[in-house]
Image (cartoon, rainbow, N blue to C red; front, side, top):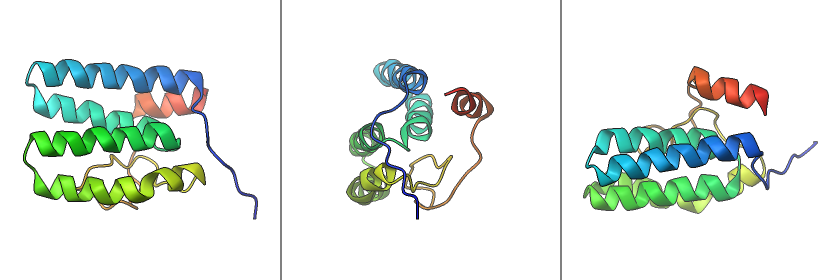
Length: 122
């Protein structure tokens, strides 16, 4: 079995990931919580194949869950924080998964077209 290890996110993906986090922060500061969550989910989709970015997205989702007093999200994110990073490292993630506790952690989901184009150009 040929195992691929993902350690470092390619620069174009890192730029898109950081842009989603900037949008998340902006929306959060302006109390646009559903938009903030949307950008967090997009950061997860972009970064989920890379351990550092994947783990950081889940960390922010955990903090967001606490801010929203959402026990289901908090519990779901704790579980995802425990397993997500190493699954990224061995390149075994369900592509397109938004990382939310509202979706099964191992379910692949459709990837938004703009992110799909980004993946194809990396």
